[in-house]
Length: 291
Image (cartoon, rainbow, N blue to C red):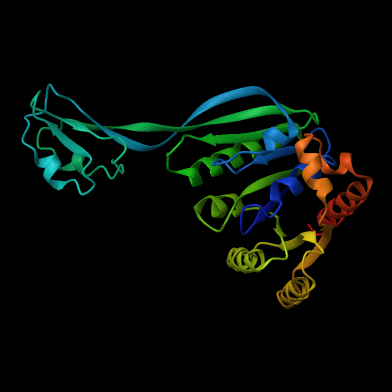
């Protein structure tokens, strides 16, 4: 079983477009994972029917036991986030969950042991059947919630369990954009990272950052150039850099308005245009051979 991460250094490079297109060539027992829990788009592109749903708990929130609380105000004086506020009308302290960082200091310093910690509900996890008859694990982080990296790691683990159960050969993971904690969680332990790059100045700059990140993790890395044909000078510079970094280019997708039209009509790119079918099929073949 091999894990392939589709990732990009920035949003809008075409990462999910590529991931959804590659999904067309998976076997039915293979597994998809949408690890972009802040903005999960793969279920929209592929269409899903939820098979399993669960609540994801991460981080803590303090709760005050007013039967024990003596209103000493020690917790308020130590809180650096202004998350403990006194209600003078009721002469009680309460927790502002928005300001609370879950550091747990208040629970340690309370002389009455009146503050306990409970797990926060920060999101949801799903196992769904896609319209391609391939199952997908995905998550949804609550608005304003933290611990997206932990949710990504949990969704990935669900994908591994499902893949093992189904005796899958391949897991394709649609990763988050950027190089932050969610990307690190998505990249950890994969067999191949496929970086989708657009030949723009910002696209090349951010691609260099994620290439550096992948190399720090000793991840086998390859690339797909999307929107090819936008800028000849940038494309030459990009190809030179990839050659220097010894990163294989699996294929290039020409810039085309058909990509936008396919998305508007909710049709996968290889199904919309015969040229893109052959191009993505070759990318899939090169990707598998690069494992």
